[in-house]
Length: 478
Ligand code: GLC
Image (cartoon, rainbow, N blue to C red; front, side, top):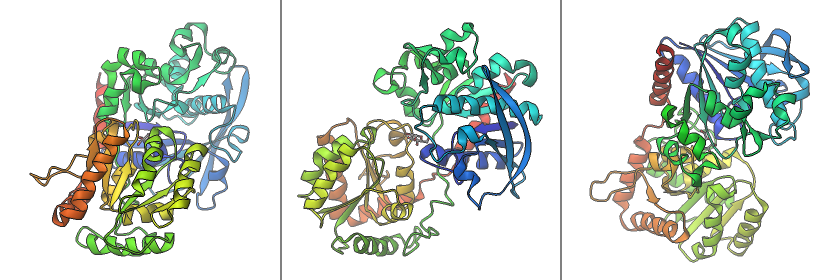
């Protein structure tokens, strides 16, 4: 099976969020499955180009049309000893030679260019995949361009479109359809939604298989509460929709080798290892050094869908509990300000770190007892998986991937890996926290059992990569 995998970011080259983790890990695991050959396409962002650790070689240059524009495409290839995974970078100074990755006014045009440049590269480099796997709105135009402009040159390639977050759909003014995308008028119905060009809608309509990153989220986005306007469109295409849960890179996220930790540990040494890390974290953050106090950790963007409204609403109340709260992340000023005020009043209880610091993030995963993740919606969520691998017990809102990966602890059977609440409100969240704390403080053996269950839970990509490979095979055989 020849697979082209593309996304707007991928670790370790460039990562701003969960998409980058997935696009960094999944293609690699796919390429290890017998019979698969995988190529990855990424934008050659300035940050990648200037990174001396990323060595590339020039492959070819040519032009691609974006409506009336003729734009340069330079293709560079990662120098790598891995034979089966090839990584190509699309170079264009005008679109990618800047510091920003997302958030510019011309993002629509930048990623339209990227999508078309990928297809043009397949023609120019004579790559003929069986399947192209697209991710999120930035690469959502590939199936539309493929069906409109490249059928003759590239033949019948199947497309898989994965939604990592339906909130970001890629919207533009209607004039974009013709002026920038160069699409014919017949494509209007495919592309227009709610008076805008909508990249994601176009992909949903034209891809051969549609996936999301957990089974529960695949079901949730059929409903208006979760679908950000697209529920009807999803419902109409539910016949080709499935959910395949994400894994994590278990070599990167491993408490036994993570260099950011003062003490590495495995399942056997978790109790001692976690205690040492906890002491070091408390010292680093200026919190009282107490082994018995429950540390509740969060590594998160401070935005609404991560449940920050709940956190802000209960922060004061939590300060009356015998806990320590540690948060790292940045986000919306309103949440930053509200939390900062609480943290300033309670320096012994609350360490708020308004920054992005991956070493501190690792230390929080390792040192905390409880990992709090009250997301309003969560397509999959990766931090709860990392937390569990580090033996930190998630307390989560049972939505999307959180519901699928955090099986609640059952004290009668001793099974389960965390604590969940079923509706998005403060009382339910506090109740779940109380349940977790009562096992933590009152049933040490029970707690160690949950820690063990969590650490033993497999979060590797192996199973999901097999599921994707089966999906590709089914499409190609059809
Ligand atoms: C998005 C989602 C997150 C998911 C990640 C990778 O960031 O919000 O839930 O884990 O994509 O698929």
